[in-house]
Length: 399
Image (cartoon, rainbow, N blue to C red; front, side, top):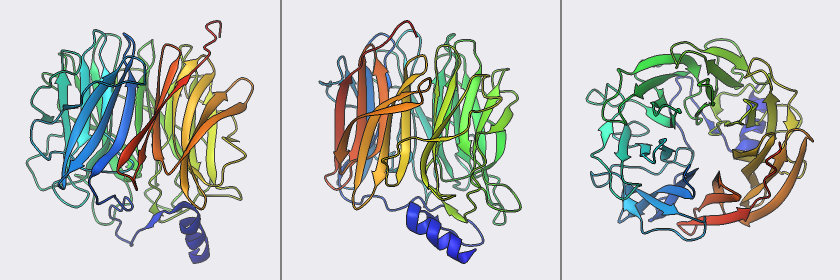
């Protein structure tokens, strides 16, 4: 078992945990700079870019807009309280856009080592100004606890859904944490009482929440069982009733048994037909790396997993966005002698990946698609800058 653990740590840069598990999210940059990018498409055209900027050791969330993915507006500070943000590699600020252009931003702050609150602010003027930030988790005034890896989405009726990994109930003997949820029906003015929706959740891997055109809700995350082998499988939870109940499916039984923080959550994509695709990292088996699988029955079952790229050395931290039915723009990290971000087009019908480009020195890439343009953003940690690249995409509207 020790040999297996050491091999997993060597291959994946996982962070080992003691018997009583604690947060370990890897090494964070200490210098000033721009980090943690996140991009989302504006349904009216263009993109929003959010990130954390650190100046003189003080971190703030900034937002910029672009009509073409190449030129960006002047940055606007989202958080009203100076320094109300923190740099976390796997957990950038998240953005969702409402049906009439409302901009909603969620991020995690820090009140102690890996402990803080999930914050929320909204803009009703296209990201030009933001409301006073509020806490989403109801225990914000109590003893600091882990609240992070938030995800936010909006349905067609404008209802806002926010989920996050929550450790308020975690005991020293517990392996996993919980996922909590809250909703808003008034453009983020108020939120429903937050509540636990899932347990046995890996505390250090990001989640991903999406809603399809019919209102079906999808939430992907990495699990850790409460007992037995610590298999770090990817789970898709699906709700047909607005998040009241969830049915869970393990995407693939990877058999990756490791007492460590993977720091690598899954990416989730849902196309117009409801086809679900998930990409994820596993350190188990003979070929650790990035894999993908798809579902044509709304997450009830999944296809056999396939390696995302046969050329990857050690792929991690994938993100994907739907181009058209069965086609996605995917970006990921590849770790060999140095870290670089790659991106390409994944066709679920032909089971083929066409690699389009790469950027040495970049990591934790994110992607979004607006019209026929893809936007890739990543952190260039050593330089303290962001990498931004727009990619022209040929979209087949017949698919």
